[in-house]
Length: 189
Image 1 (tube, rainbow, N blue to C red):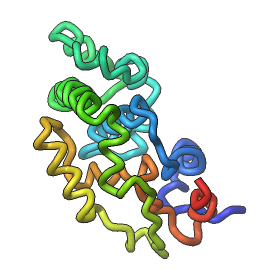
Image 2 (tube, one colour):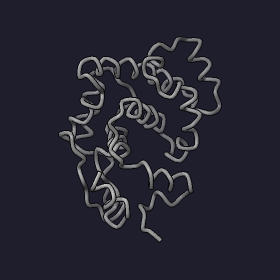
Image 3 (cartoon, helix red, strand yellow):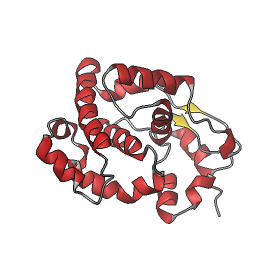
Image 4 (spheres, helix red, strand yellow):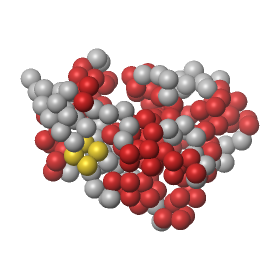
């Protein structure tokens, strides 16, 4: 049996996410936007809760088509507030729309959101060598800088801890524990 990060052992859904997605470098703007939305939705909740609702989020937010989400109106917001498949928090829903608009502005300025966001790690995955989950930080200087810059550009629900979780999810940092089989696997990606 392969050794895995402790957090991945709570459910088959978390284990699958850990084994196939978490820490894999993401350069597709649509998927980056999806992770930003999901990380923001997680604020105050468990990642397991969000993973269970992920497919509902994809449907509710039109598979994270940023152009469509940026144009959501009050009728669509009310529809989302009535959707039991997502976290029905008005602040988080409004933030998703605001963030979509800010995301598009960054795409226009940098040619892609990918080009913008990966600047915080100089365009390369930073490989950490944590032995235990207690070693893994909740935020770093880089996530602090990312959070500050995103907020200045109008983003909501992008505190430093959320930004660091985003960096972990999208492979900007490799935070798999050194004993985890994925730590070594991802070094070649």
